[in-house]
Amino acid sequence: GIAVFAEHRRGKLASVVPEIIGAARELQKELSAPVSAILVGAGVRAYTEELLSYGVDEVWMIDNPSIGDFDEDVQADLVAQVLLERRPEIFLGGGTVVGRSLLPRVAARILTGLTADCTELAVDPATMLLRQTRPAFGGNIMATILTQNHRPQMATVRHKVMTPAEKVDHPRGKVIELTHIEVSKSKIEFLEFVEE
Image 1 (cartoon, rainbow, N blue to C red):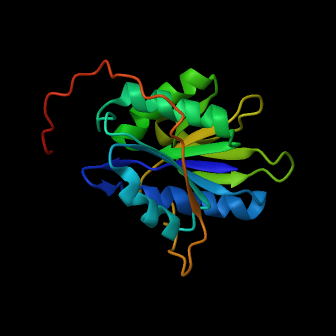
Image 2 (cartoon, helix red, strand yellow):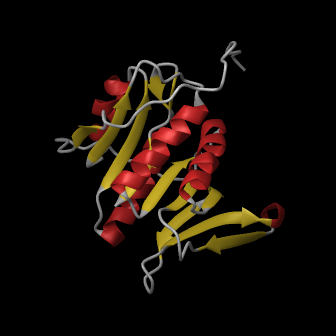
């Protein structure tokens, strides 16, 4: 299937999340595969209803009070464990500050590639691989990348380029709590958050 990273900050889902789900649902038409969201953090249960309303089939959730908003080492480890256990073909995240920091850590842990800052995603009809298109050489050319040998095929999506998913009238998705995955202690010490 296709999994997306449900990024959240300060009490709400990131605005890029509906766009990533929209991209995943477009890919779903070609692959006939379920779309799932990976949701990790403290007190994140409140976001599950919104994720399901965008047509997500499953929310894979780790809700633990010891996971801090800025514990990227812990979050990367948890997301990697979820991916290794659930084994989606494709994993998408936002090209945000968080996505650009967290997803490379995840890719390194599970030994797969990551195409950053994609502006277009499509399914190659011949191979059924994910065509990940992004600007290269300062935007002078567009490079299309295929991840042939490793799974999941990972990409971050540039903000404001994908059409957000429309909400569905009767969500049918379900929440799967992954309480068996152990949460480690972060090595990051959070000092303060300064609003930009």
